[in-house]
Amino acid sequence: MNVSKNVTKRVQEKMNIIASGFGARTGTKVWRRCTGKWAGTVDYSILFDNGESLYVYNSRGASKGYFEKCLDNLISKYSPEAIRKTKEISLANFRQVADIDNAKAVELGLLPYEVLSIELNKAGGYMGWFYTRLRVGDRVINHLETGAKYSIMGHKIPEVSENYFVAGGLSDDEVDYVFHGVGHSSTSRLYKVRSGNKQVS
Image (cartoon, rainbow, N blue to C red; front, side):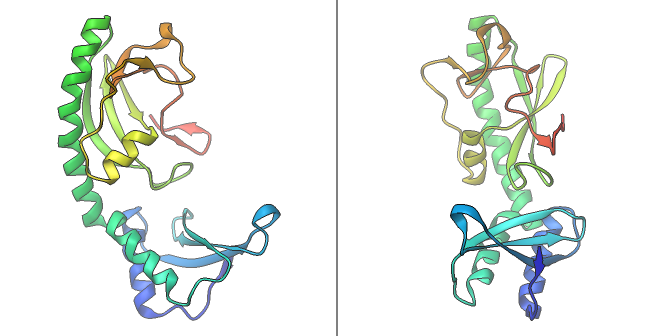
């Protein structure tokens, strides 16, 4: 990674706000030239002082102020206040849906779940994704999947599939709970938050 020079005080302050949302203190604008089919473009990221980095955008020649515009968008999602608000709203939304899911689970002879919290993945793969911390039976798991992520980011009540089916990659005999109308497994490594190659939960 290459460090960008001549970063203004205002841009630095904005990167630091984002850094604080990810448990760091400061951020540095970095870039790298892409290769292969992306040759001729440049990836821009924020490198935090804790060693983690957050991708910002890819460009073939964006305007001088585009990076700062992207920072404004990231602040709306990842400032400490934005994260707190997202967690609070989404926790209430997801607990509404849990009642529907658990009724279906009882019908199928599966386990109910309890929504413990909404969390932000701050490191490793899927960095910047929100996920749902659930209690299923005697297990506490960090459930992550795309539909839930977009519901959380949009502060929306999740849609529940009207027609029950088993999540991709799982078999019927693995399923032990229903999440948004879809069968999932608390013991499988699929649909769980991982840090690097290690599962967080």
